[in-house]
Image 1: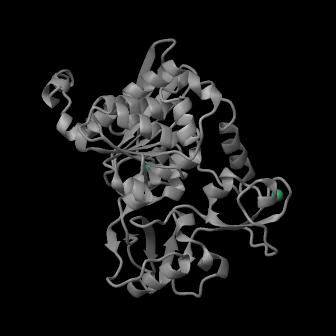
Image 2: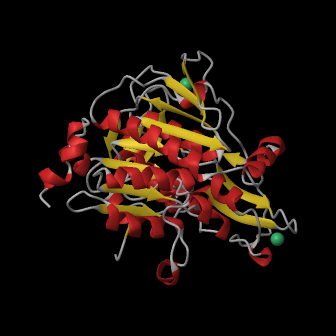
Length: 394
Ligand SMILES: [Zn+2]
Ligand SMILES: [Zn+2]
């Protein structure tokens, strides 16, 4: 079928297939909602995706997973959500040459390169930590973002422009969570318990959110700053205008981007990065996108774990290697979180040795620098972000 004939009906409905084939869409979370969104976008002619999920399919996902793996996919991808969905997307996309990329990290560890790569960011994650992270980074990079969630028949979603001064997700969700704060940690853990979830809500919400993605990709911005609520069982729907919260802890302004000075070697550790940063900003702070955990107690046996990674990595699996976790034990206890790394002072040895990859600062990624007495900026880490993403068959 010619491209013209293939997209004849959707073109009549207002889609521009040329734009959709070129659009780059980041979808974070490959649960029921993320899969339904990706399915609809791919059928509609979007071809370039970055799909992020660290998780694997479980049997109960089958009732609301259009891309639940068959036996062959299980053998090939071991039930890994991002790989399975990317594989299926390349088969169903009606774009000429679909290019689904994927990442099997947490989005925090995949880092800012994901956000920068995208024309539009879609948040389909259930954890408040990942939602808040994504909202912040989208704003720092000036990217539009759609986010949504559902429970049983009820759903909500909103659309945020990446423009300076506009409202953000955190204007009405100011709380984030910290693994060091018991209450929020417990709340975050509770979110990963059993929540009511059905395919009909996932499909309806996905359709609603996809139409907002289409608006963004077609430069129609009428839904920005609105929040939509619905209940598919009672067939109710509402929308509210979101105000800019003057006490919002979130980011409302995109930051300028600066490249590293030419001739800098590729950095691998915080120590390497400090050397590069000092050449252009001698004093101030490097601010990782999430606080760095140096050491923490194994939640099963109490041993001290050497973490040296962002908080979400620790929270995902807060156990030592002897308790089936990823973290080696250490005799040195350095509790607490590091959210600002001083540029001029000699670095703390634990922080200096931390791998940039474990802070989500990957090749082609970005890190926010706060110069002493100057304006914040995003430093572009040398490299190609696409080299850090995976490809089906690649
Ligand atoms: Zn805000
Ligand atoms: Zn342990």
